[in-house]
Length: 273
Image (cartoon, rainbow, N blue to C red; front, top):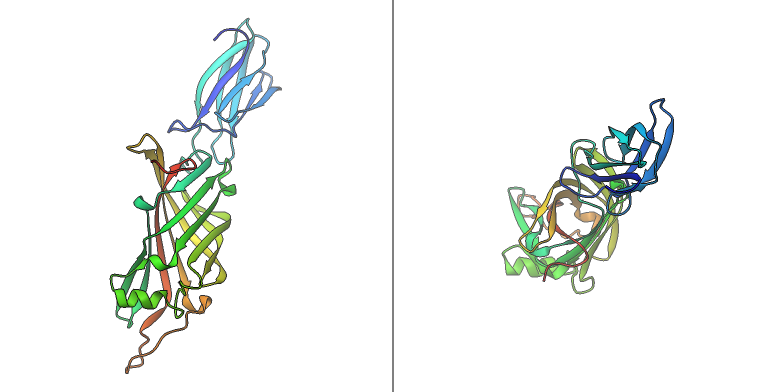
């Protein structure tokens, strides 16, 4: 390093920048002499200090603080290099910014009981969405759109019925939409996502139980993050009351629907070409 000034790079264990980190510098008496926030690349560039030995503490919301020693030379500068912050709960999250859901490598499925004996599995083949990861993870958000007519249970007659006004009413309401309104921590790498689901023209509050599965590079030079989420819907909340009974008095379709989301999201505003 040339010239004066304090320099440092704040990173996660995976090498992501911690853009909202703060460096606090104290002298040997414990007096604070400097406090500087990292820029968008996780870099800290602070002014010159008097030569001597200092304690440097790096903090960031959602991360465990770390302390290190800085020896400032006669030039008034010290280069601390890379300071690695561990995510609280030992989970390193994706870096802040937009992430686009990749429908080719994601799956939106639903499971309903049939005759109280077996399960009917369906998938939605057409959907899109975006996650906005915030520096403070609790400020993150998600929004998604699913095409109602893309439901596929492997039975054409049943699928047409599901698209009808008895269920999804895809002709009048071609899209299901979900918009989050907040997050609540539920454990290491897990959150409850609070949001609003609009289906068949009705909007209802729906919570998703979300797990973060990790981040890594893909074959196209980008970065991907993986998530899994589940929820349970009551059909009557969306006015889907069609439910004849067979002779034994057993309902044809169960009253609840389990929804499972396996999501891959690509860093940035667009999917790879």
